[in-house]
Image (cartoon, rainbow, N blue to C red; front, side, top):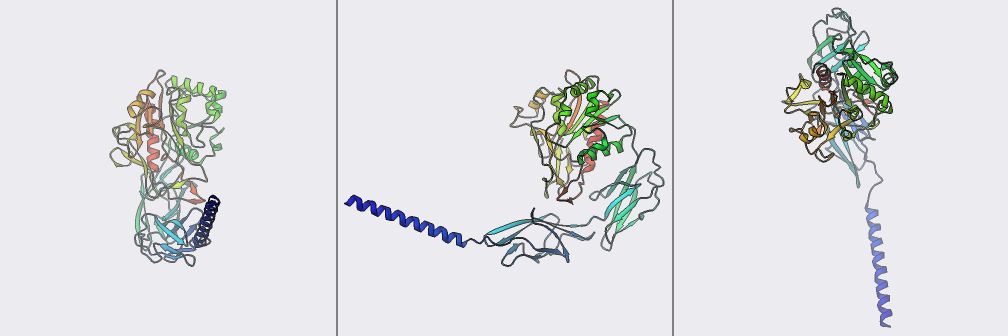
Length: 464
């Protein structure tokens, strides 16, 4: 009888405990407030409404040219019952994006808020060709077709509302030397320097691609790189992988092959075709040269430039509609110890042996195909990599002063076939400024460094 009573008491205690637990959980659930909104409904600065992207939790406000953004007082509207920090009416320095948090009940959302002044010059065109405008360095660059008379050109210039430029749009100007343009409104006056050039004679460079013709290229980054090349060198030609395979492309007389591949992390079958790799190897064995950039850096394996399996071991990157903006950090390289190497000649540096290639605030896909040294592949460090690949590691990430962490730029000057190759394969090597959800991001203020290291590499391969 006693045993039965003990069992009954134990059962009742367990039942009561279960009821209490369920009751507590019910009370906790009733205390949670989750059916509320944390979306900012309005964000204004000086009466100008910002663009609110609730899908990506970003707010962008574009103010008139010349507006100082270091002491801005936003007016913010949020749902009833919600709070936002920093609060509406709080003075903020928007020289960098600021995080705002909206909290309502038990949920919250963080917004990245960017307040920026509009660029004064929207476009600068001559004979329908668009110039590259660098608002950070206040420069305008345009390469006209070979034979263009630079002494009498009429730029068509589109300006932001309320902004004037002198000389004015449509003025006939002599561009045989750089020309200064004065940009101004009621708040600010700045000088932009415009440099218009024609292609220079230089090496005969064949731009490789998987499309049958250059006009058939579809990847924006590859198009931008090829457009620069054909504007820079009068001897530029386009060669498709099919042209090489079927023998219609004569590589004799080509100083350098350049393959910039940005379309996919995996190399296309057209390039890996044995007929193509065999003919490129023959070209290289006959003192040819090759520049491989972006994902094309992986081609060193298929071409036998490195021992089998010793190509880039860290290949990654986003593809549209993915991607992101690093609002806080410029991206660049360290070439400490190689400061005098011709590949880095004339780069804009922020300290000796360090240069930026991708400006903070610029949308990026981070297309990378480099060697990761410390933990992967058994390389351990730069010396181990050089021993195992036969190459020279010329640059790494900007933080890496000893070049023992990554191989972002490399040359392969020797080997049994005396091949000559350079690879440039860090995520900061980005030719095209993609849009984020249809909205152009901040222009890359370091694009000239990308052009310069490419020009240096092409010239170096020819002369060494």
